[in-house]
Length: 321
Image (cartoon, rainbow, N blue to C red; front, side, top):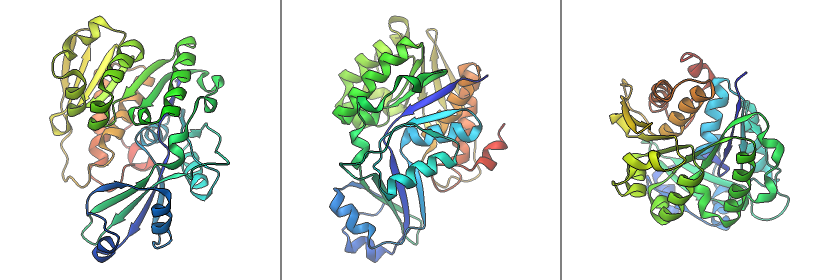
């Protein structure tokens, strides 16, 4: 029986809306950019748009859903409020076969949302309110979450929240006791730059599998130590994604390069890293070796970049298996 995986990350409901260029200008939104806003601004915008699609989002949430759609037992731990958007997020996760673990908050910040404005030229501009996702705390983590679990996947984005760091600390303690392996996603170059020392110490002490892209690895290791890191620390495998240049796998003091999968047409790179991680971890859960798992991850990434949006359908993924 294949063991389970748990993902911890920001729970952000993606809300897609079709708007005109004039609408963007009237709201001082820069085309193609992502802007963080407070709840008041986000609520005001929500009243003026007609959503055409709502989807549960967030980097690790996307990865966990991808693993669920491939057929493995997957759970997600993130924080949403007991409001309409929170209900939409939970329902959406459950509809993909993903178990949503954390109780919705009754008070405090509203559910996080990323409003994605699509203009007639197909360009995507985003406005994000992080809301309740930043309030994940140790009280949300329960020991029984980790029964029969092989991997705990943690999102680097959580590091910007003090309460979420407490939740991570508790989850790590339980994982160690239950012999669950820790997977850590670096998430973002600027985040690595901001928390480099903390990330480095955390990874070498607790992380079995590290996943990140080329720029994140460069910032973490300052292009000096990555080749020797595995021989001196707990980490067993490092996975460095490099876009069209493929993926580098570090294991047992060796590195291997896996080529990317050629695609007919590049449409949207959103979610490519998340789906690579989904394919990679799905095969690792099944007991395959890291190189074979990375090859499958590249196939997953190649599918998502040929469509709009961060998630493929179950029907498309079934063709890979």
